[in-house]
Length: 112
Image 1 (cartoon, rainbow, N blue to C red):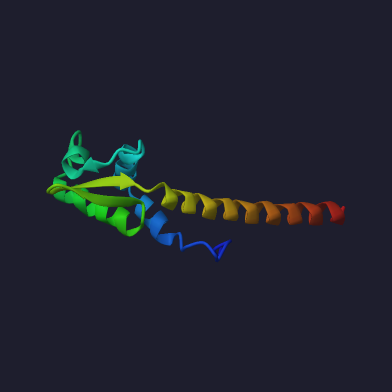
Image 2: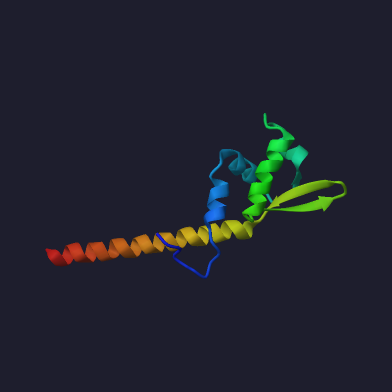
């Protein structure tokens, strides 16, 4: 199925980044709007800081998180705009399916 709204950015990088359990967990931790350091994000996990950093860079490349420097440390925060883009894409796909199913229903009812 093609992008239902070609005016929207390509959602593939967002969904690819969200396709990993660790990245989903990191994004969930950042979902409260608070920027966190890599050290803070690595607490309560068996992952190394290097692994956390790798996953954060994937999320950042997809536009799901932004980093900012605070002194010598980088802090990461979720970007709601990217999630809204993904939601808009899924809403478009949902509308396409609703339209398709509506046409199928009309066709079947007319055939009776």
